[in-house]
Image (tube, rainbow, N blue to C red; front, side, top):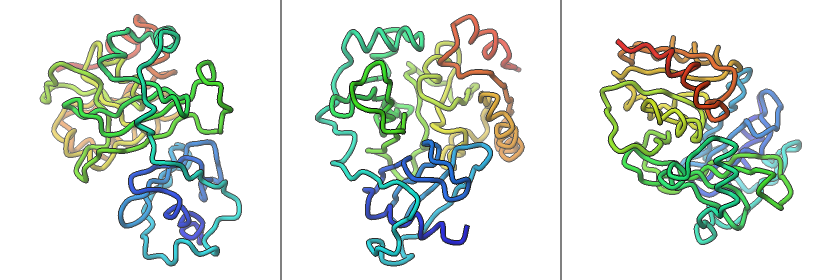
Length: 281
């Protein structure tokens, strides 16, 4: 699409540096279901469509023109809400018993896992806050997730939003579930979301990609390691492409196709469909 840069460039005046929105329409596949992400960086905008059928991604430089000019306002995409800097840290509080019980029942998480992974609640947005953790347990950002059972707010069409608050330029851009001691020479299982990574981490070292792709920065961490890519059936073709593209960088690479996310599996199902299928040399 010839005008996609001008269609998206208005977001530079709407987003703070490091802030991500999933409210804009993808100018390539024309979908607006929360799968198209735009992140503002210092010198422009990074965009990516997480729909496997589209998978458009790229960078729009900030020197495109006058960002605040009306000519750059898109005709068809919805406006991005300008708010105080998220994640409203003064509003982030501990989960109450109802919220803890909900996460335990929905995702089979233990209370200890909820505490150790620093899962919280945002009282302003009424969303569960999943911290994006570094390997050392430092909070690099947040994924805020809407659950209708826990919120009285009207659903705004975007279930999940990612916000980076403490990310350095060389950070891996992934999330590590809590672990006492990572063995960096061992196998790493790659999944899409944080809750799934917590579930898998009971059995194997795991990393949440926060998408269905491996971030470029993460390759310096995964290089030379034994990697197992676990994505659902809708993304299996994409996972195979990842293997073909990056397998030379890994010591080994295995793709396991699943019919639902690990977070939605029972313990026995997760072991049988993922853990028992991992090839260990």
